[in-house]
Image 1 (tube, rainbow, N blue to C red):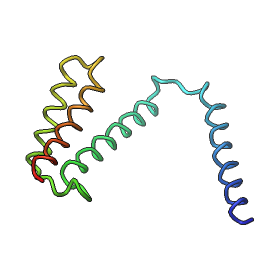
Image 2 (image 1 turned 90 degrees about the vertical axis):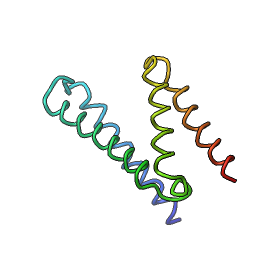
Image 3 (image 1 turned 45 degrees about the horizontal axis):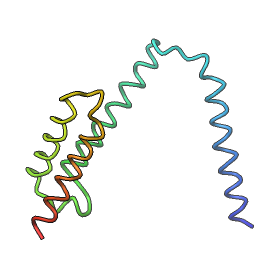
Image 4 (image 1 turned 180 degrees about the vertical axis):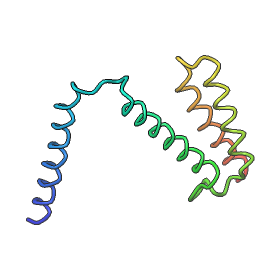
Length: 107
């Protein structure tokens, strides 16, 4: 019974926050300074987490040398930059394939 109450409380809390977000969405101006600041902070957090994942990985990725991780990122970015509007999936596939290839080659 306690688990069901926790689930219901979590759902209510989530949907209340979503409802408030929907209500306020019409009043937010994308060109406002606060919105620009929030966007900058969001992009900075994503960049920092990406760099942390590459430089200080946890788990299996820690077994891959830093130079290999950086080279795979460079190759993936090169694919992405070649035509950014249509290269996200090929860039992700390039990174994944190269990492798998390294794993198969070293075992």
